[in-house]
Every structure is written in C-alpha cells, then in structure tokens.
Length: 130
Image 1 (cartoon, one colour):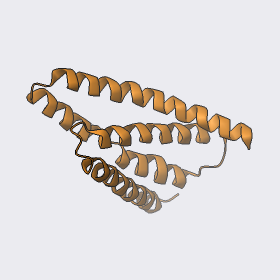
Image 2 (spheres, one colour):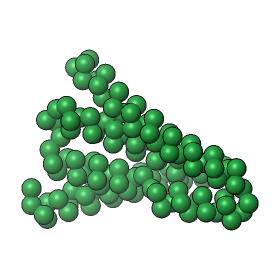
Image 3 (cartoon, one colour):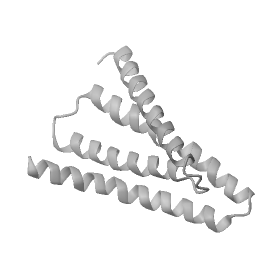
Image 4 (spheres, helix red, strand yellow):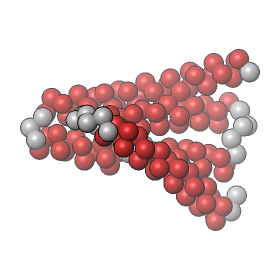
C-alpha cells in the first residue's frame, strides 16, 4: 500500500462518513428535538461498526489494509465526533443544564463501550452463521 493510496482511502471513507453524519444531524434536527440525538446516534453506530471491523480484522483475512483505512480510519473517524460532543456538552454546561450534560456524557461513553462490544458479538455471530 503506497502512501498516496492510503491517503485516498482515508479521504474517500472520510467523505462518506462526514456525509452520513450530516444526514443524521439533519434527520434529527427536523424532529425539533433539543437533545443531540444525531451526534449520539453517530457515535454509537460508529462504535458498533468499528467493533465489527476490529473483530473482522482480528479473526479473518477479509479486510485489507486499504479496506481498514477506508472503513475504520476514514468512515468511522469522520462519522463519529468527539469535537461535536464536547461542544454540545459545553453548551449544556453554559446554559446551566448540568444534569443533562452529565446524562449525555454518561450515555455517550457507556453507550459507546456497549456498542463496540455489541459489534464484536454481532460479528462473531455472523461468522458462526457463515
């Protein structure tokens, strides 16, 4: 894998992840919900997918280096977002919504951990079924 091809894979995956993330944000904004469900959903889905990718890479030869760069580094890296999570948490804190900020923080990080291992478990089930 050349350095240029690695950059292309990350860029393509990153573009797709950013567009998917934007789509989730728009979808949830249309619902006029105050809670940042778009960011939460992106982070939890991204952790599920990266759990599946990590388990696939650990147990099989199905993912090439380029595929891992495209999907894990590129797509999941841009689909999930720590920076937006942090901005939203700061906005809650500045607005005096400390309980909401704490709940969002806990839900995101506990949910991310659970989602990652759910992805691992799901992939194991899929491999057994195949």
